[in-house]
Length: 93
Length: 401
Image 1 (tube, rainbow over the protein chains, first blue to last red):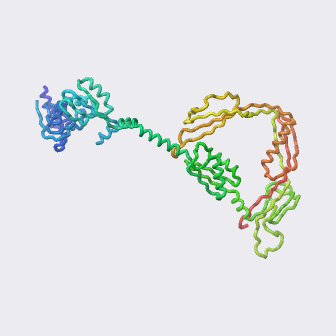
Image 2: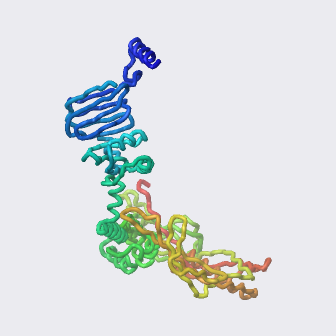
Image 3: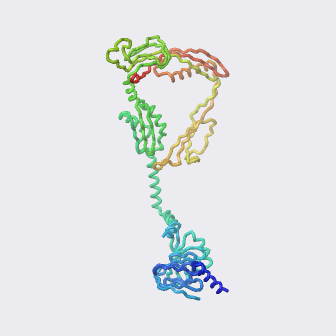
């Protein structure tokens, strides 16, 4: 049932050319070079340290690795990460 | 940047979270709509972050649901800065001392300008002002109002025809007009002497000009008494044009005055018996705050004199003023006059009224009671006076006549 709904939403988004992060509850990650990462629409912070950030997103996790991490702002569903970003990985679950 | 500045105005706190996975506390904060920023992890169990001062109550709610320990590390922003200032005693004292000094200096007379007067009279005016306590450097609250200074100056310096006293902030501007200047100007203008009142000429003292009337002539207001043209009647028209002179002289005439005086037989009047009570108030907008002498005197009849003094701060008038109230006890006196006595008083009053109307050097030669009646408790007298007075008035000749 859940799979069918998801497939339908993907098709719906493609046909009407809607922004996918809205309809599919996917995270939107904006990066400025390797110094800023702006993550919207995440579903919770799991781990944060000066070298690693792990966020729960729809259907998995986002892991960002680097150095000197500071969370510049943290509002409800948005996070602005500052630091020396080296690696962004998606982990499906 | 703007986000930060706004937070500085409303104040923000740095908090330290201790516990396992301290970053999750901030995640929880975000879920409860408490924005946080500058989150750093110091070690495995310690994280630092900043939140708004106004979110503190919400933070307490969140804290109660977790096992994390929250420590307040730093307080920044305007509210804390202001509170910090309050505890800086020297700064506060300095501020109040400065305010007090400005306040005192604002209430001092800094400058007195006198304009429009000769040096001699100007000095006299300044001397008089010093006597009233108006000097450069004296306090304004010891000084009467400009209007009363003006009145006093006019009576104390007889050379003044008029003086205007204006107070603007901490400076007094005086503008005077001398009597002598005006008279000089008048003398130079050529003109006739004309009668101001109806009367019979008694005496003529003409020092310049051609008299047109003789003793025992009856004159009416506007009649020319002494002409500015000499040798009026002769036929010197062919000669060069006659120049009018400024006629000068005195024309003493008998003038009659009629006046009516009524005096009530029952008299009721208040007399101040000399007992006074001084009360001091501070006056702020509508309120009178007594500061000295709280008791109300038990006077049955009284008169109240109010003196108000304003305070200034720089050029602004403060809404507070000082009021000195003097209460005079009065006694009500009733008097039943006999008719003779009333008549006597009426005569005196009539004479006093007349004196006010006629010039100083006039002489009352005769006084007659034309009619006398007593009506509904009042004595009514019709008086008739004969007065010898100077009725001549200068009337300048307009050019081109």
